Image 1 (cartoon, rainbow, N blue to C red):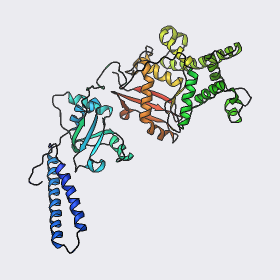
Image 2 (image 1 turned 30 degrees about the vertical axis):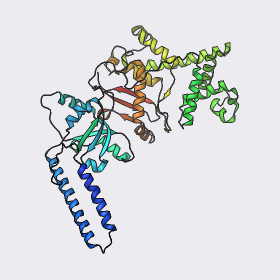
Image 3 (image 1 turned 135 degrees about the vertical axis):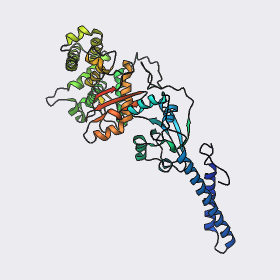
Image 4 (image 1 turned 90 degrees about the vertical axis):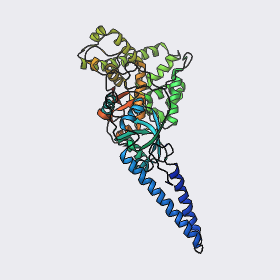
Length: 440
């Protein structure tokens, strides 16, 4: 263009072309506004328009010919420099590429890889002969108003050709290959805050949280309704007499529902306001809850040829004690806090299914030890599950809204911080299983 010979590696390759395009637009606008009687001006403007168009066409043809012969970024180089570190990148596409026409000149995000794809690339980049492949690469982009949801999904599921990339910007943050790292991990970007809960009414705090979720249009599961009503009745006993509340609080025979009564007495106990009779009643409700949950544990243990709780306690006293403690205090927990029509939650059965199989601190010897353990400490597994559900929430709700369960396994597992995860959620929103796919 203008006697210059552009090269694909020029740092300002498209600057002149962009400027000439602007000149062409300005000249065409001047041409349309010029009175027909000014023939000399019209002729001069037409010559400029033809010249600009020819220069632009020559430039585009030249670049396209060069791109047929070479490209700046291969699939392997993108993985080696950015993908293996899960780094955020800003991408500028070649101006005349298919990717540029579909998605615009600039996008930003993180490259994504299927499990086998990542394994293969890990092997390739450590080999003696690293090829340069102009293949498809996928990216999880930062949402913006210029790219609709269909194209966002296409970039994530199908991708674009690596050779369509002209330039990449990335930060100089420390490079860590989380996929290759073995042993225990910390959840990235975690900020630990010291918190002293002494002197705080945990029941009031839980009630405040439930009220906030109501304000944001969230749907509560049955156990959360019991908690909400039980705590509210304790702090304002007159509520249980309201006609709009009675049907939710009482059974048809007039007795208070056990679930609601449990949380009312829990709040009373927390605030040291139970009578002797109420303490006995609360103790009985706790016993019933414990028995019910230990029955769930017994069923789970039979899958590993442990046929009694006594046998389990004898062989694994520390694990039994940990689960026993949890059985007393575990509350069903919802992971979706938005206006999701079907809340995604876990219960004690979910907890046992996940932790006995995949938390190495709680895996009994034998069958469960063959399962893939999480690369995180026991306290962080719930957070990993929550992160997974938040990442997948739209797709989960799409399935649940059709009365179907949600499954993610095989090549299309969820990737986070160096691990791939499979998950199954029942059609009612209950988490059935969640686990990492590989030993690390």
